Length: 408
Ligand code: PLP
Image 1 (tube, rainbow, N blue to C red):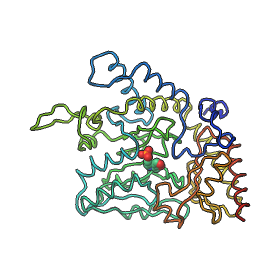
Image 2 (spheres, rainbow, N blue to C red):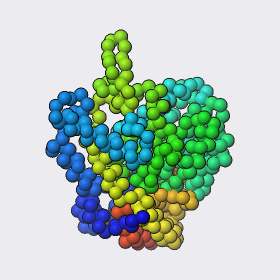
Image 3 (tube, rainbow, N blue to C red):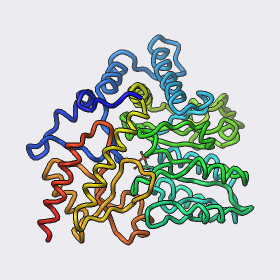
Image 4 (cartoon, rainbow, N blue to C red):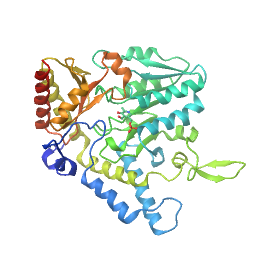
């Protein structure tokens, strides 16, 4: 496994060298919200815009053909990245939220009825709660919740006990955005499949940080966003098992998702086009393809090893500061640390860190049930990428010590 040469790789990210905050070098620790784009992605997007842009699929002219090839080859790149069996199992969406909504509408409205149940975990992002709640309201179905323990690990015995003959779907996050917990999704999928229940995995916080193989996981749906994967906003992926996608109803109607239309009857296109109505986000898809190529060339095992070393270092140093409480201490974590400093409001911590040039996220992280579980309204969240350094972690620690002293 090759190691990460972090100083050299930082040179790939223009924003890391260019931005000053209050006269200081930017220390960007908000990667779980959105990561930065390397120059190759920015340049690929620019090249697409300068040399290849046209609408896709329906054109016979040269540029339309070039743009179609660029878009469809991005799909193949993503397929290889997650090891899906076929390109048609990879659907471009506008992001994770859009992908989950697509499943809630396309699959849920067809297969969930009154009295049915959907199992979600207590650590889900709102994107993997609200679409199911809306479906349940419409259908008279209900949500069952897998509880999380004090460390931030899901209670797997309780999970196994939630299944019954009305269970229609399990929706679980691969990595919790608020706690950093890496859930044992493979084992949880096996539990669900043993009872004939399909599983959607929200991979928004996982794909950029560890290798993901949808066939090895054996998941039925897997979702993620380009902007957390060193790509642009406005693009995301729904992976779905072909047999399930074929049974699903389209979510949006319009151009490109049809084979024929008359006022009497419309025949839908084959997958994946059935789910990509209208002009899709062509340029963001091309950018995502470039981001995935960049990350694949680095190698996710090396990325994960570096990020884990940052996590261990940050955890050790922050834990040593009196008054700092880390929320989420699971045995298997991604490089995300949620914490609070005594009773200082997280927003105050966030803006004091900003004064030092350090970007973190503060708030409920779109995971209010998790905040409620830990009895806090909000946390400060530092989230690392492979381009972060030990020196940046140390700067965070020094700034936290300073804030702690201010409020003593
Ligand atoms: N799921 C998780 C675990 C997330 O962390 C996020 C974003 O923070 C989302 C879903 C929603 O992603 P998006 O806003 O890109 O749709």
